[in-house]
Image (cartoon, one colour):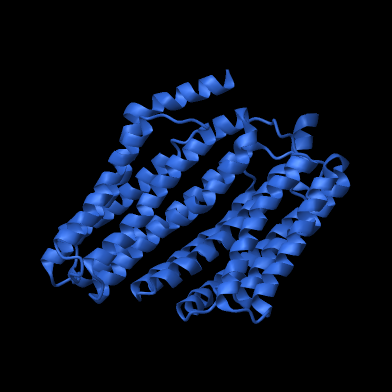
Length: 433
């Protein structure tokens, strides 16, 4: 057997201790490992549970509390994922210690997911969205990284100070998160502390790598990892579409309205996928890796907005089943997250390309026009009008609203493919030439 084949089999089949000396940040074509893909599976459940809680509490009328608890959940889920992904991109060696540490983190994701309903209920009652169960899950998700960072510091002296800085940051942050649960603080002070902690967690990595040196993370690998989590989050929109159509079909059987809703939901999913991948993340980051941090942070609201699209469709399903929600509320529940996704696609493109072009603003405005038209339609035909399965007119209006909102994403895709792609090419050519 050839020596290179023997070495490949040795690397893939034997997972004993290996040194964490750091990966090659310039390696081209690096892809996600099976371990990383397995790790991502737990986030399907976490994002789905967060979207379910958002839909439930929006339907109950607890709008501010639902949005606050949802924002806290999305940050907790996304930041833990980003932290692991950042480490793995720099030091993944797929040995037994890394595998076991990753499995422990997956347990933490599951525990945190069990805490999401408690978090949403507490917020609806005017309490803090943080709770002991969520805290336990979050700590279990984060603490294994402390040992991994220290291990990397020992094996990679050139980046030891940065690695130990990451480890110390996680320990201090977990102590601070625990204090927000254990200390009897007023709600306003607790919420302020949670916001400050989130900002601090995002700020410290930037300062660490600016002052102590950049770690050997791979920009192209990070682009692939973030795109895969985006796909996972889009799966929540597909699940919500099935849920919404099941509600319609269960009450009145298959109809033109049910077909339009399922078609619109799938078109919305495909269009949002298409719009996201119009951002040339891998190509640009491999050429300009210094833009990775800003691009990375733009994904926090991106992930939350995409999952919220699924929540909006679930609200529509629950509204049709109960007959207690108005057309206006259902329209806003679906239109707002779609608009937020389109805003984040535009913002992420701008951050990545570090460029500005007037052709993008008219396109952006035109893409938002159908969603705006959906809100106007709901307002003109009776914002407080209840949508009931027995009321053919109200169901027809809801179907029109869903179709209009879905067309916003279609307009964004068509406009970029026909007009705006040329600016993306020109902007990149100017910056890497």
